[in-house]
Length: 424
Image (cartoon, rainbow, N blue to C red):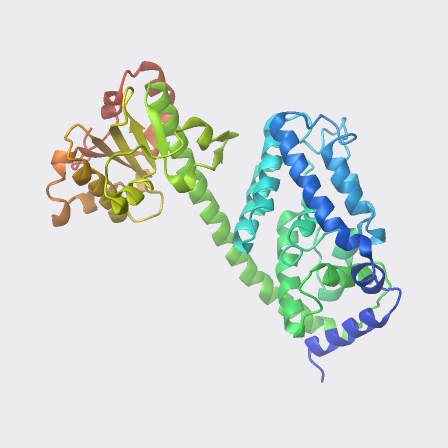
């Protein structure tokens, strides 16, 4: 009895030998396909720039997005209809990226992040974040753009391909679901790799196979689909766990970023200049890029080079209103080590030798006991001199507006901050 992979190899051999298959008419023999990659990437860059500049427009027609989709739909029958999901439908208010400015900026940021992100897990994270936003009418049709940005990591996606996938793997995936797309992607990658050698590292080749099955050009023998279905279920179980972890990591990162943004907002409202960790300056929260709100680089604090590089990674620093002195330093500890966060603050305190500095750990309410346990360690027995306190996420979120409105300087934080005993 042959294995599912052996049977699939026979299907692939038929697919590759048919001169009228998608493999031969589009994937191998179409010069326009190769030219499209550069044109679409350039078009996406222009689209991101237009969204940032506020010139994107409020309709699909005449927008840079139309130009990108024209390049995609030129790819013969494989992408016929790829532009339809992006047509502006005023009565349905979909897709909601033309008149909703927040959604438009989120879409532009998503594309920009995908343009500049070659790492597989980060791309998955961007897709999950876009899905989390639940932008009305903006489903996995976007994958047809993503394919031309990362053809070895993200397959295209349309009705015929979904139909072909369901026929091949005895499944019932839905067209408009990002979660279905990500599950399909995991199965496609694993099945393609199992062919050894794969049909192609470019996932357009396998997507073309699914397309030909979906339109009835290749007929699947039902005798061996049961085995493929079992393999598909195993792959999807693993993928769900992985995507769940990626989503969890994304939520952690978003909460960390939110606290940095709140501390930046409060610091600026109190009249301080703000520095955020060098590796976080390019991040954006609710359409606001931290780099636009903070100083470009760490001032010269006359620190040893190795200490300065560590201090530059402290999450938030408030700098003097009239000089470069550090007034307050904040380490946001969502899930990372409380111990290492304290050490970075201790490094700064011992290097600057100034008693008027104020140091804060910022952490979720659920980690308060962990903070107190760390502060009781013998290694930190002499921390009282450096005024190390902690702030809880819930209280910082709740009182941010009040701190900005009523505070004159850092001392307003002391009303919320807690010390070793957990008292304010």
